[in-house]
Structure formats: C-alpha cells, structure tokens
Image (spheres, rainbow, N blue to C red):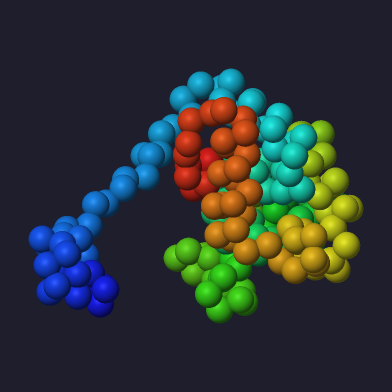
Length: 170
C-alpha cells in the first residue's frame, strides 16, 4: 500500500489500485443431487478412495449431522439391538464433546443385514482407536470441517457430480 501511495505521490500512477473497490469472486453455488446416479457415483468414488466411506454412508442413510458423525464412538453402535445412539457431537472449536442440537438424544435403528450395518462393522473393526471410529492417518479424531471441506468436496469433484454441501446429504 505504501509503495502504491508513493507511486501516486510521485505521479508514476494516476491513482492507487489499492483504493479501488475489491472484486468479489463468487464461489460456484451449491446444487442438489436429484438423481440416484449422482449418489451412486459419489459412493463408488468414496469406497475406492476414502477411509471415511462409512461417514458418508451414515450421512446419506441416517441423516446424522457432521458433528454427530465425527463424535460417534464405537460404544454408540449397538449391533445386538441394531441401533445407533446419538447423544453428543464433536465440537471442533473446543476440541471436545458437546450436546446434540436442541440438547436431545435419539436412537437410529438399522437392519442387521443392511449395507449400513456392514459398512459400520468394517469401519469399527478397522479403527485402531479404542473409542473413535473416524480418525486420521496420524491417529487423531478427524475434524468436522476437514471431513466436509477437504475429503468430501474432493470426492465430489473426482466423482464428477454436482457440488453440494456435506449437510445436503441429510
């Protein structure tokens, strides 16, 4: 800014470009997956490329929120009763658990032979963490924004489907 102001002062420039209105570049707007083949293409890509495939299946099949998925622990999935206990969510800002939206808890039932049950079983068995299901390669709990912005959006781009927010999978 100082150099541009000096250039104007020394009459090297007519006016400083620093003082002009900034140009806002709009991000490409979100769209919606209104065709089943978009979901199929995304899931095929996620299964082939991502360690968080189960997180994406959970979002699509149960409607769980991002923080609830990241905060899900192994003890919250009961394969005997075929239900998921959703009672807390992971807060990235505080790096700790907090209550679910509206301070509520709920149970999500699933069929024992469903794809969701199989995917959850594999995710739980493959997680080396004693509690968390979705962890990074360095062994830490995956951060919600990283899961939504980096991993999810990268898969959306690779699958060649319409760009949607993670929350859109609910």
